[in-house]
Image (tube, rainbow, N blue to C red):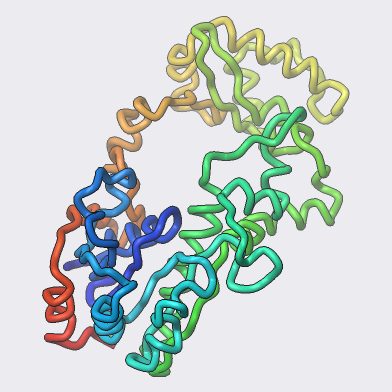
Length: 357
């Protein structure tokens, strides 16, 4: 493997949501990942698609003594272990942090859950929408009438997978210096709350109202919102700063018609005029009209359209998520497709040499 994480050995126990997404980032950056899957599952249709790429997949029955022995042998040679089961499940299998670190004191044992390892809800089922509901994030997103889930981007990937990657890399860096690993308790509810830090700060400072659709970034401002165009599609407008707002107004040819934007009482009229003007042309006509300006107007592209836009196409973003980090101006390519191996082959590959510490 090549990449900035070449030599980092990660043992990933199959899970859903943020664990494989985090593994994808690590694989794209060059980590050597062995993924343990239940017997018979590797050939199943992969609903995660490219998210599972870049691993060596081994099928191990963790409910058998031989399976647990093989899993511990892999943990003994790993730098990082990733798991996403409910609290206590790995301990009941004899694969908890104490069991694994008895074989490998340097091991970083990274645990990913929705609610965390402790607390009143630790053993309760949940999904992204539930975790962000308890942080205030879901309350803040949507229309004035109702909150709307922002896909599963905030809890699973922003609050979960991204914090998991940051935490385990920090712990692995420390382990190389200290010789001692750590157990990480990463939860989607904690990470989602951390993502809300700026908004809560604004709330405490009186710069944010605790309701939807009336604030700077939730559609409350007419110049930070989406508008339907003449062909039934949409454009996104983000002209927050005065200079950008002036460019927007000039582009809409409304300089002589709009009231002062500093008075909130004028916002309904400004929104009405914006809506009427945007409805007069198609989405792509407006995109061409505002191209090259600082009016902060962009087309709202569909999932099929977005990868074909000239900008992501020029940057090689492509159709699949990738580790979008630049090192010396070079973007690391996506990892290869996953391959399968027997537990013995994976153990032998990791046991034949010592990973850099």
